[in-house]
Image: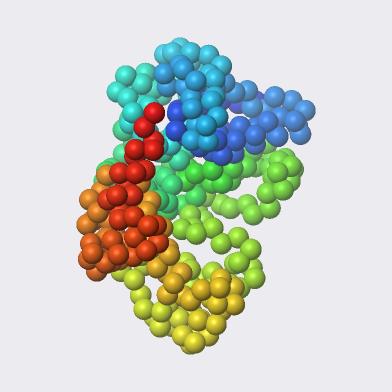
Length: 327
């Protein structure tokens, strides 16, 4: 039976949450279900929380999540959701993957939330299917799993598997499931509980920068930032950015100073350095490769700009960051 077809039947959900996952990702799934149950005054969603190792999962915010039960090969239900974050290969090792593969046939729909997409790919469940993950990891995900059709959408449903790009896209997906299965009215009411009025479809792209109110206040600046985000590895000149918006460079300079209190060039460099810093802390890429990915002409150029922004060279920053993470 199609879980997205209209029905009044409740859904049984298994949530697998690993350490180093995001509380926001968990909440955007869990609280949406809670809200639906409250408004419907019946248990439309019946969930149970598991962890890969049956121990408490320590989330990135420091909050510890206790499992409701041990994860075994006897678990079954309608939807199996895998919520993962940093170091997913460590938390979902080969032993856990073997167990998860035994569970595939016992659920009707499988989902990967944020780095949960990587877990599904390692299980071989995304081969020759469309999928997404958090925008920061899209390129690495595509390189790691060339048979996966990686697209930058907020969420993707491909047969009996779905993937989402993070917290807010997971909220969007859950509203989509409620809308399809239990009706538009309930979906609107659930969104209203959380004052969530910017509802997206799965086909909406994940933004590199969440522009929020700026997109309404000054859409030309928002569009310029999107253009910059699309050209981090091969930066455009500010004149070229202005040209894509049918603006003069002088007008673009004025708009950025008026709304962001900086020049377009300063903001563009800030975007590229933010991306470089993420790659320094969250990947094992050589610093030279990071320089190329973020549009710097040389390792020396990246190092100079990085040091000015963050007080340390990229290599030193990486060492300090990893040292701080050690227990």
